[in-house]
Length: 243
Image (cartoon, rainbow, N blue to C red; front, top):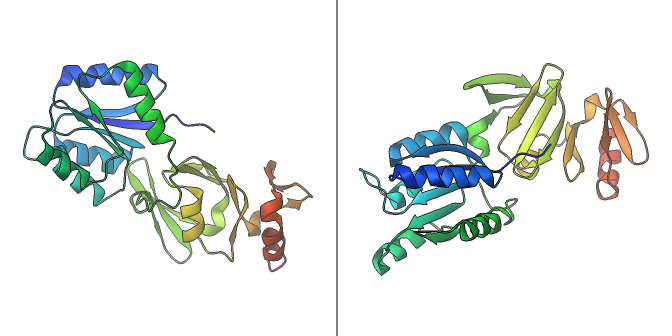
């Protein structure tokens, strides 16, 4: 399952914001919103958690772009690209403290926008210390509380069949439905109990108690065939023998 990268635009010039949104949509990205104030951007991030933030550095209102970035980083570590017209040295140095991935100077052209975003999104995310997980799920001893349709929904570990990763998203598959989380599989692996869950492929983790069939190069849970990679097979086999 491939998801388009989700981008939030924070720009107080609505004409520029609308133009950006149109260009990003044509490039195949999903725009999660166009916000003109820092407070609204923070609320949007909490609710939708984009993959990338395009942020006007000279945002008008009580929070400028830099203060907005600092506030958002308290909740989630997102890659940020600052949009800027004329930035003096002092503002540039202050902006650097928020560790942006890039600066795009206004007026920008489509090719520069496309290349900059592509380079930022292609940078490795696993192991980067992102804080996405705590906004989507709360992990207890035997269950998740998963954010689903705006509410926290209980999901017992035993209900989970397997987890499939796609970039920085993970989809939890259960008999009653699926849940998409903005979290890497590496982060999920670190948070889940190793006695019950094990990684079997770079893109899959399974609940050992729900595995029905084990073959040389794959396993089956219900009617779903899941690849079993050579690099993960030894650990998987040692764990499943303990079930």
